[in-house]
Image 1: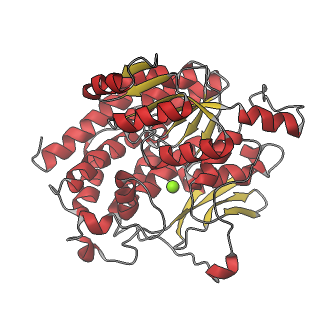
Image 2: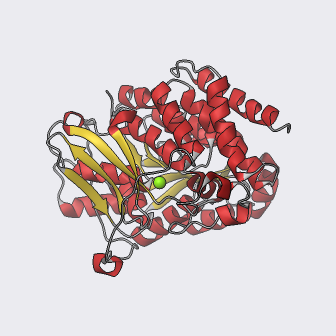
Length: 411
Ligand code: MG
């Protein structure tokens, strides 16, 4: 099975001196998709700290922020996804000579731009899948924070990465942790990896019963105990859908089956995940809950550099706890695990249903537990197809969104 650790054979760091490595990194330039979000903003901070360049940048609608970034980093190409903001962005940057694109076409063009060294995809939602494909098709490595790329398009994406000899470097803290643990394993990593322990904070509603979750508000669901993240992923964390999506991503990235991934609740979010090796040795990666370590490593791999993240004091924490998740209460989690077992477009179905249901919840149109009902219902009602064609993946996504709208009588 393909995994993101297969050797590329053209590692640019091979045989270089440490000095050369540092110089090379300083020259590193990125395409940054999703520059305005939580991961995007932290990626900008990492670039600022290390003097990395931003060749191109895209965000959804905040044209003033994009213009500001363009001036600071001397960015050559921009994509403002919502076309209506293209004119104000052009006015703002009048005379600068910066190329300004819009929509999916613009996003894909930036993703594929090989004047940069790597494409960082931190776009939120299904809209992130096609840019990843576009980057890999054009021979770009991808630092990946967009979950949908693998949840919905994993079969196509991993096959394309293998065919084009490209690397996918995970930015999510859990997958970066597994990636880091495997960095310390020599020989055939796929053969030696017998399991993954995927940690979950449990979100703001850990320990609650189903009945107690009925009347939860968006405001309560948006209060995550450990991580500061965007709105969509914070809700996914509260429903635990996030962990289900991460299980699917882990299977694609590291070439394991769903049965080889154990999800455990770890309230402190200090142990970011672990690998179980063939001799039952467990290797874990720990650190304070801060995305700057995974972001930075995705950009500097295989080197490590000083980071903006604080040092971890284990004695300040005193104890770390581990518990089993409650699959009955967190319906999204069990639906996502079932989808992972089913395979094919099941990932796209649960993802599409969830994305739409979360939108409706944030708009106050459905309740918190309706998200889980909708996701489980979509998985039961829509047949899964092979996910080896983009059309099947996108059709499944559309069918799932329609299922949610029909179920809750909205459009
Ligand atoms: Mg995560």
